[in-house]
Image (cartoon, rainbow, N blue to C red):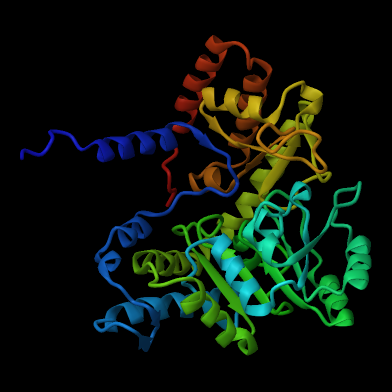
Amino acid sequence: MLRPMTNPIQQLLKEEELRQRNGLELIPSENFVSDDVLQALGSVATNKYAEGYPGRRYYGGCSVVDQIEQLAIDRAKALFGAEHVNVQPLSGAPANLAIYSALLEPGDTVLGMDLSHGGHLTHGHPVTFSAKMWNFIRYKTTQTGEIDYNELEQLATEHHPKLILVGYSSYSRDIDYARIQQIADRIGALTMADISHYAAMVTTGLLNNPIPLFDVVMTTTHKTLRGPRGAMILCKEKHAATIDKAVFPGLQGGPHMNNIAGIAVALEEALHTSFTTYAEQILKNAKTLEAGLAQRGYTICFGHTENHLLLLDLTNKGLSGKEAQLALDAAGITVNKNVIPDDPRSPMDPSGIRLGTPALTTRGMKEPEMKRVADFIDRAITHREDSDELTAIKQEVLQFASPFPLWDR
């Protein structure tokens, strides 16, 4: 049989590349990887089955992939200062599940952050499998936008959780890990941090670091770390064996060695001094974008941003997050609809949108460009019912974005 003249997947991938190049990626959990990471992902490492860990595999022929995985582990330890690292979790959700299964017994209580107040779905939302296995109690934020540490302490005292969990997906402030550790010590709880969104700022000292204090820390590798989609569990040595057994054979089979190779490359890139400059620029860009949107009357949830993201409440603009997302899509600007604290609307049509600066920073954009981005966003939302205007903005966005490569070297 003759092969078709064109490969539809190759064509679709080209279209996706053009979409990324020609638009503005503002979803805070998305980023662009280097050509070196892409090369590792598409390498022959994808062919190798390697159940187990370096030096302790269930398959032969693992001498090379053992070195690849060990490089990833060693680089993660150097970058984060962690005692033990597991680089095999396939993504953040299964990594969190592995941690819960390692540290908890069915029915144990976990104190985690409420999803609408910035937490993550896997931190105990009732729709998840985790919530069927463990008893999650959820804390919230204050009127001024900070985690309500007093409420957290009260809930910890009342419910005596086995694990206190912190970390976020849409919260825009830093976390006082020392205070949380003190609360945990007082009631005898374990501590866990999910730093998936803001790991780059933790490793560079720009945000507080839970690793010296907490029992276990999880991060994905595909957000601010600019690696392939995957995750890592960093923990105290006393938890190492339990964590490793929970990942394999507890929840996973053979690791994705091409992903681990890509993680190793991304971690090496993050060890360069230029990575600190990149992380600093993420924060500068987020503050500039915040100022531009605040000047245009947008409500910034949690008061302000101290990290890479913004959560906007669009109630005063007279539209939902879904409507804003669709209008911005039409203008070549990618964000995601998102619930706001105690949102009266449904998650599929919430009151807010979430946006962040990691991907545009990777492209080399700085404060002047963020001012333009704020203007594009406001114009698209203001003219959301005018398809001609949205098309015109999309053309402006294309011209604006074209000088910036997906990876600015």
